Image 1 (cartoon, protein in one colour):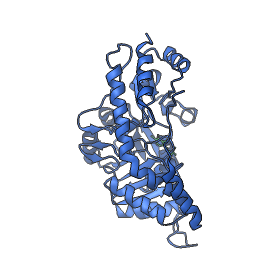
Image 2 (tube, rainbow, N blue to C red):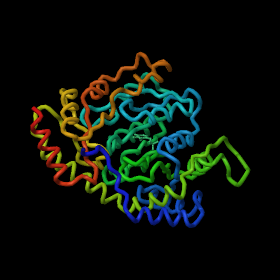
Image 3 (cartoon, helix red, strand yellow):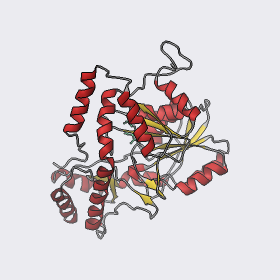
Length: 361
Ligand SMILES: Cc1ncc(COP(=O)(O)O)c(C=O)c1O
């Protein structure tokens, strides 16, 4: 079986984790601080606040903007549920914009349409889906024109660039995930990035019980801290991130070269000014059911990212999103299939995947 994801953990991660174990400082220490500094600098931002997961990073990112109950935040429904849930955690209201059929990312024209209907919108939460940066020129233009705060869910796009600039550095605040299937891992883990000192200070309080010093609690906070064990894994993985991404890009190029003449599928697009880091390699096809059966029979792992728009989830239906319609997203949810692109694939694995897909119909 060729798995859809396969995190690469070597001796070096194990040795640094052992060092943390031996130090007795399992949480809150030098490893976390070092990791925060390195990842923030790499992503071209001033401050990094490490967290226990990508979900808690997103929660902190949104909460650090101090939205009020009922504030509207425009976002995409074509993503993992944590993206829009992070708006709900702040008691704000997600408003769903549709995505672009070619890039799978939020459609700036759809944002503009929604702003006519909801002119008092406070923020936009974008997702650089599958590792491809959103249309940042247009999104920044909309945000500036309408005075909107910008949150970047960069959970799937470590190191991706738009016009040479790293994702996570465009908005007021951004969040990353280091879940094991991501471009780099800390086991569970996440980080909040920002250039704004006040946002950084609030985020620091939020992840640690609102506590500027021991047993003093200034705001309602949480225990969302990253452990030193996770940070140790992250420090080693971080050194390999660019290599991992390069391998993902090479694998994607090989898949595209081998598949893009087939008339029953569409391979992912990469607009000129963007560096795609291929967290997922997601194709589109009108023959998905048959294809999934065929992939299973041939022991090729796959994922459906994502089978349903966020607003169609029971949770959102109960919240009153019954009438939301994003036609492009709905179509994509029936067409998409992610196939393996991770850096642990061998040339033989890729040749096998290409050969099998070429023989599908
Ligand atoms: C787009 C997106 N946002 C947020 C998350 C949440 O991250 P985590 O699973 O680390 O909580 C994920 C990861 O699964 C994701 O893919």
